[in-house]
Length: 154
Image (tube, rainbow, N blue to C red; front, side, top):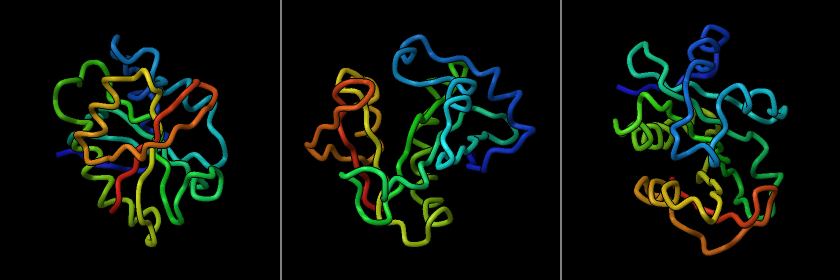
């Protein structure tokens, strides 16, 4: 069973050893890059299957106040990362399912989860839609070019 836990120091080694799947190289950051470029608003969460670290994701704690397209009390999901050796085990879907429940532990007033994906990330778009996120139809132009905005109401 997949679990979500806040990042702890003892998770670092396992997270550093996770490899980026070849198909995701241009779309997700490995742990060392994500951690090195974190902001004070980024909260890292570890994904575990029993005792095995399989990935991580980041929640932007200031998301609802930092981007114009955010809804009130919305969580910003960034960099859902599952290691290459754990692909094709449905961990992404399980992580989103668990996050829907865990979101209220992060913010009891949480109304939705939002994420953006590069317009050319077809695999990511297909995955996030299959996890219950809806394309808002809006576009965001950021550091990575044109991005699509997806939202999942809780």
